Length: 449
Image (cartoon, rainbow, N blue to C red; front, top):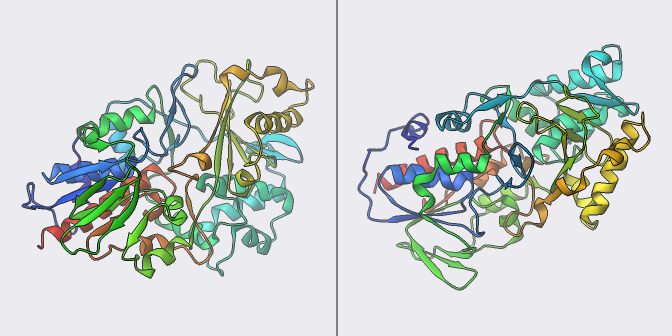
């Protein structure tokens, strides 16, 4: 697939089809951001290579290949909106897309109810009004939790706010910035609907979209140091001691990897970049696919927002499974960190106990229906080259992604969902949008040489 329009639509000036550039570009990371950046660079006939730390492409897009009758994603799952490059790219591959209806259940006082059944619950209605008005928030920057308290939202409805607003960002509501959320809501322009890929995994979609550059990926090559002290070349050293030379580099690794110091820089990066890292959060994230022998929560329900260990359970088989008897639990932020010392079996047992309490018509209904061999847990914080779920703005950090992505000496450029703008952080389209921006910055430099 070739997407010159994605670059030209955002660029202040269109790069020529075949620019003359004697240097070469290395992209670090073969997730969506890295693949997209490499594709745009290759489209302009510039020498580009991708160095990937793991043995797989896709980054936080990952599939469980041996699961049921639909593609069950271990990472990114929802396709948000219908007016962005990610949605357009998927449609261009010919993959069928299923729109997910907005029909969640909300647990209030221990009972799962649809929104239509909560029309007279003033606490729930106040929470929904609070969420709807976040886009217009104009108060001081607080955590989402403190903003809810200031708005006098009853505590019995706080989990509704956390599950609907903070959980999709990979955060708990006591950490994420309300101004950052408001800014994202104001800038989001990708469309309001949510979709699933009906019959193809998102890894397969990436393969179709970026097949041209997959041969340029060098796998199992974790970069441990970047030396840009020589103005004529950048030397990258990998974990095996190998070196790779380029004149420009685009870094797309997850924020958690940068914060961990897994990559050292010589000379040290400017403070404008590194200080921004500390104003963006990226915490643990666990996805647990719970398979059952029968659907006991209702085939029409798309999600369940709870006060339990998982703020949201969603039905990943909606519109694409004949049986629709899987619930995926999303455990993020502080809740995921609290689970870090537990075994997979212990975590699953806690989730089943929560569901048993919500559906007590037959004692232990979830546990009795549990299809253990077809269930699994995936902990993103334990993935060596990921170490977390997705980025989210901390208090006073709503513009940190802009600072973080400031090019260094016009030689080091930054992409990845943590650097996304337009309200797209924590999404695949955010990763792609960030690559559009980074590639424009790159071409603005090399075309002026």
